[in-house]
Amino acid sequence: MRQAREIIRLKSSSISAHEISRRLGMPRSTVREALKRAESAGLSWPLPEGMTDDALEAALYANRRSKRGHRRIEEPDWAGVHRELKRKHVTLMILWDEYTAANPGGYSYSRFCELYRAFE
Image 1 (tube, helix red, strand yellow):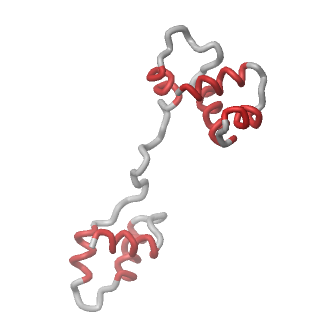
Image 2: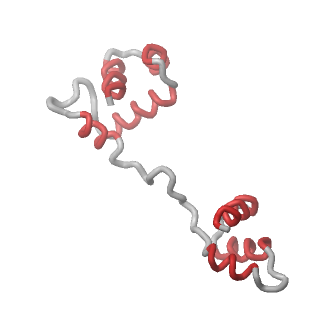
Image 3: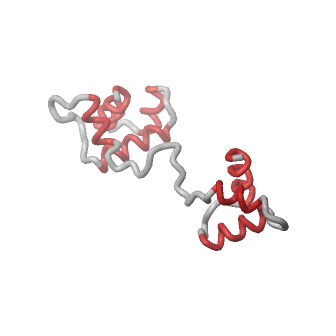
């Protein structure tokens, strides 16, 4: 959070995101993201008196949509897929077709197969 404080402080001095990223040795995209989060949280320099690092982090990341590592796409019933594959004339392609019919915008066939192999 020290760098977030520094980003906000430098931006209050009318320094560009490019220059802030150069000074702090971090990617411009990270600086832009921190500035965007600070703006949406209504934070400006000087920060409110007594704002701890935990409070700053909570303010900046309050609207985070999902936790990292969590899948946003509906998961197939892998145990059911495994069971169905034991039946005669059933393939992963057929099961994937059924999955995409029920979940438009679901996993691509290659990702579906990859996840099934990991389950298996």
